[in-house]
Length: 114
Image (cartoon, rainbow, N blue to C red; front, side, top):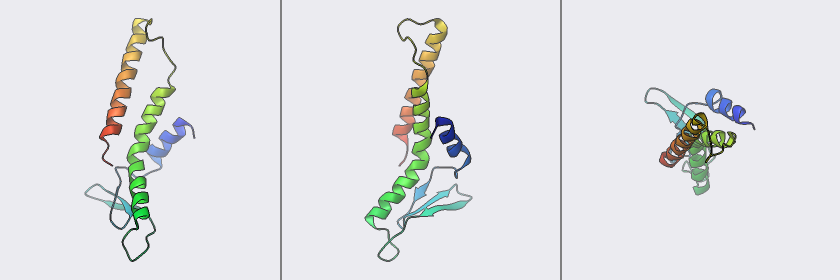
């Protein structure tokens, strides 16, 4: 999948995030005004999630936050390389803003509540 297709998928084809999951392995979105069930991971043994079901639900919920962050990192990585040591003033600005954007994306990835 190309980066622009991933971005479109995230922006246009999914419920806003972050997503959460509960002890029944239900993945949902709740902004305080609206509750929307995203999916229900199958459970066995009554209505409580199996350990595997809970892990799957956690992964699905986390993906809504992680995919956009990973997209930003992939986009930055896809930019053409610059001559980091010998560059013009304009290229230095691009270099510095690229480094700042990468640091910001990495920090957001590290700070994501999963």
